[in-house]
Each structure stands twice: as structure tokens, then as C-alpha cells.
Length: 401
Ligand SMILES: [Zn+2]
Ligand SMILES: [Zn+2]
Ligand SMILES: [Zn+2]
Image 1 (spheres, helix red, strand yellow):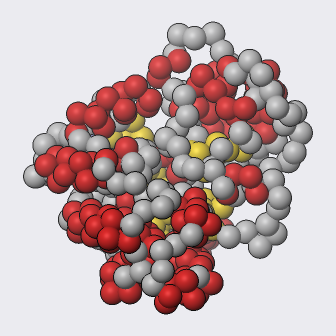
Image 2: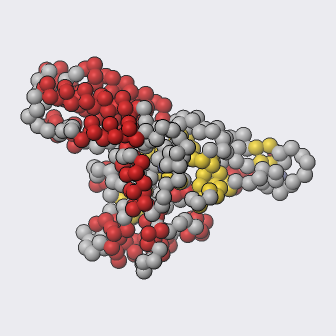
Image 3: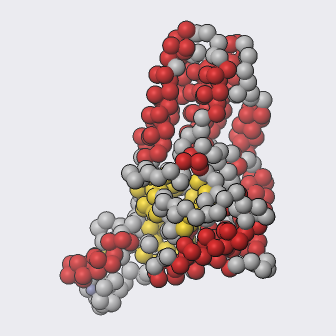
């Protein structure tokens, strides 16, 4: 867990506050010591918290994370492991979810329990007579596929419509089968409504012991010391809506009024015009249509190219939206058999992957390159793609989402 923000005039180990100059932990800048001995003595405790972010209070928002030093684009901020996983809570009965959640809370360490209970319950359910733990869970869980998970450190990070960080899955070497179903699921809004937890039916009993998923949080922009570290709670698609739309989604699904720099008008322009143009261009696309003439495929590919150019100018969106736009163009250009346009999409995509450092994004890119190899004969033939090929490229989702 990140350290709490202090006034930096006291040694973190011996509480010495004299005139002696204190030195910072060179790696994270989050804690200060009066001597190397004090640092060494504190290391066993601090090593788990040695991340370039500190917990602090933000007026009107509650707790949040502040950068304790400058953080470069693509730099790792921290790794986090899910401590609670609800497998497909939307498909399960309230009683099942309740039992499954309480079982997992029972297995947490005392420190993790304290961290869990210090999280804010979902505001919208404040006056509803359901389990308090479910309110906390639904106010802080992150969906990955159909499943919802609590990451105790990630849960500390506030939302911004122009976030400077995002998180991605880390491969687990002891990969299990429990998550196999979720990999194919389309992404949903970052936080499913609590209605799911009231579902009156159940497909199966949640008896499996889910693997503890790991994620990495990385900077997707340069972050300056003292800046708040933020992620975007919205879906990749939602995050491209205009300011009013976003405000409504955040109010309805997350029960807060966004006070990020974009919504407060501190970042200009607010990019609503660009967002509207992207939405307009997206609306007339028929990506998965079969039996389309090649001229029409090319016209659509050029339209996706325009979308990519606009998305690349955006500040107001999740980083993943840029990746998504490259992916869309690569697919469309492939189906339109245009080598130059496809290469342009791949180059832009590769640059994002290299600059951001996310493991899952790199694996997605490499997997897509393999797909292109697999379909290279059809691509080189310049002939119209078959229904099978269109389905292959259109139904495949990136694992990152
Ligand atoms: Zn000391
Ligand atoms: Zn440190
Ligand atoms: Zn906002």
C-alpha cells in the first residue's frame, strides 16, 4: 500500500524532527529518514510501499494518490493483486454473492480487512437494506470480463476524464481455467450496477476458488511531482462521449459529480467538438457487414483512418481508446486489402505499445500480427474476404479490455 503523505520534516523511522537534513528514499521519494541506519531499519516495512505515490485527502473526493516524484510516460507505478473476486456476479443470485463475498473477506489478512473496510461504499445504495460489504464491493470493484474484482491499492485512485494512468492485466504463469470464459467477454462499463447483485436467478453455485489476478498500473502521460494520479472509470467507448454525456454516466453509475480538470474547465479546449466528430463518423460504420463491395470496404477503412487521426488528438479519453482506434483501422485496412493503410495502423499501434510498457497490450499486438500471417494468402490475393474471415477479424476482442 502506498505511504501516506506527511510533512516530510520527520524521520519515518525514529520520528526525529531536529535541524538535521533528512534524505528521501531515492527510489520513491515518498518517505524521509535522518540516517542510513533508520532507512535500513524501516526497509522491511517500507519495501512493500516503495512506490512513487502517496495517499492523501482531496477535498470533495476523499482519499486519492499523489505523485511523490516525476513519473515518466510508461513507467510502472505499482502492481496490485485482486484480493476479492466475484465470478460473474451478474449471473448469480444475491444470496450466492453475499456468501461468496463474505467467505473471501474472511480469508483476508487483518491489514487487508482494515483497508477493505476503509473504502467508500457505493453512495447510491446508502439507504438500501443490503449487506454493507456488498455496498463497499460495488463501490470499488473493477470489472475484467464478466468478473468483478477488488484491488485494494487501485481502489484508492480517483477518476479523471483526462487520466494520466491506466491499468492492464499481467500474465499469470499458473494460468487457471476459471477465467477462460471472461477472456471472450466484451468490455462493459467499469462498474456494473448493483442490480446485478440482486439477480433472482443463479446459473451455478460460486464454489470455485478464483485465481488472484494481477494488474500493473502505469503512467500514460508524463506525471509531475505533486500531481494527482488518476484513472478513467468510464468504459473505453463512454470515455469518448461529450462532457454532458460523461457527466450523466458518472452520476448515474458511479454516483458522483466529476470534478476533474476537464469538467471544471481547467483543461482547454474540452474537446467536445472532436468527440462529436468521432461519434458521428463511428455511427455510420458497418464493420462486421458481409457481402460488401471492395470499394465500400476501402471507403470505410478511410473513415476509420479519420477516426484514428481524431482520437490521436484527444486528451479526454482513456489511453485504451487510442489503442482501440489503431486496432479498428488495422482490421478494416486488412479486410479492404490495403497494405499501406494497414501498416500505418500497425506502426501507430506499435508505438503506443512501446511507449506505454503494458504487458497485455504487447501480447495483444503480437497475437494480432500472428493473425495477419495466418490470413496473408487471402490478403495478398486482393480478393473480397469471405464471411469466415470477416467474422474472424470482427468478433475477436483484444484481451486488454
Ligand atoms: Zn531516524
Ligand atoms: Zn521508497
Ligand atoms: Zn471529468
